[in-house]
Image (tube, rainbow, N blue to C red; front, top):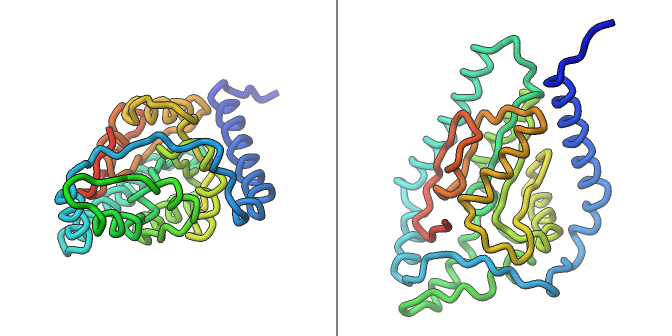
Length: 247
């Protein structure tokens, strides 16, 4: 009888979890996610750390520049190149034991429509109220380059996990937006309601959970340093965002 290693068992469990979650999201949430989100009972307490109106306005201006596009493209290319190189050099490794992790906001979903409205209304300080109302609309636009990276990973049988600072009660609206944007993934990790722990602490814990299931995270991509710090990935790719900072 062939012996099955602990690692193989972990991989099997991890794949079963990801497949089960994917089926659950598709079958259970596809209809519900596109209906009115159940978000009003709990308000998102996450605050962005940009308070200067000028900083937000300048960041928005930069986000429409050639420099921004160059930075964004370079980060995505580095991620793809790393995946290709790793697969080429490790042909004996099952790609389904590998994973890519991505942030959501300003990484694969574009919230600049909301930011533009806030910038217009801001004089000195930025009032971030209405952020949850915006998320509930599920109208953030897709960011094609980073989404293409995730599609490339899945085409190689690499799992894709999303880790966001959005709170758990926004799951339905978030899934609705991801569906609209055509984003396919294997797991969605969200901040617990009312949890004020720094993103730089929460996100590594979630990445550890992914690796504890038996996955090796090749690439972690996000627009904040707090998306990337704390380890549990072989490569970390920073996308540009001068509009706001989250620690």
